[in-house]
Length: 346
Ligand SMILES: Nc1nc2c(c(=O)[nH]1)N[C@H]1C(S)=C(S)[C@@H](COP(=O)(O)O)O[C@H]1N2
Ligand SMILES: [Mo]
Image: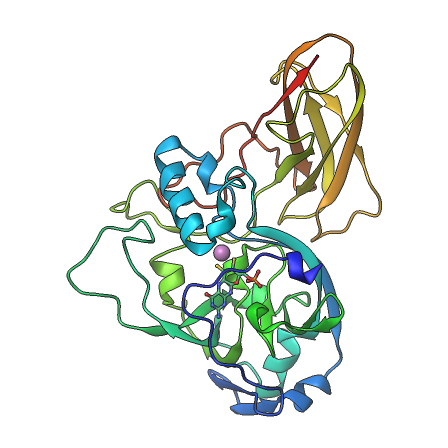
């Protein structure tokens, strides 16, 4: 449900723009720049996508103990009620978004043949705090800008990349980017620009701050190799039983969880109750959908008392298998390691 969907933004939530006042300009490397109203947008054929939205920072506390302290401090700052939820991955939700393909809007302006990138800008404005982002401090503050992301043309033109006005069948909530936001299935949440007001078609890669200075994979702040983070990795979690559950009785318990990937369907989830020594295939609920998470379950007979370490591991259509360790990166983005859940059977 929308009220249970997580909310993240880097700057203050901007002022409300009503559908009547909303305008979208498309300029840059196009045949003719255009300005669309909300009604113009609604005249185009609609499209609905059902997808997982996961923040790149979800579960970052699991990378290492040093980072965990900072992450928990940050979460407490964002939400004083965070205490007690500290080990729950809170920055993920799934839902249904309705809008029009970004490609249909670009078609109205006519993308020039030399265009390679589509920069989408929100109305929110601010300057990132380097230290809060875990970046080295600098004497020169970052100049303020509007939140923006520059999509490579191929992803911008994908029919499931949409400018959405509805979430779960209702007009977007203001905090989720009303009246119109971008939705980029399969890629981390930060690509899905909220409060969209401007689109600029570029003939070179975009230089958005949250692209070149953040949300990249690297080994250290000085590492010259910066890889922009796009497709979500393959990942699964145990949701039942929960870590630190009260002791369970001997007998049958249904282990449950979710699995998702940015690169297609989940094809397999395996479960271990002996800390990864042996694995058994879980059941996957139908229907499975490309951008959505799959629900998995496995009834397990716990016949012996003791402490069990429950793990799950997902495989996707692309053949990627979730591993115990996430891909380490200096900014601790896109954690997809296997997190054991301890279960005590009396
Ligand atoms: N305009 C704007 N869009 C934004 C952001 C932002 O700061 N400003 N944050 C991004 C990030 S980091 C995430 S994870 C998602 C979260 O979307 P939600 O708040 O609707 O869940 O929005 C993205 N879109
Ligand atoms: Mo995010």
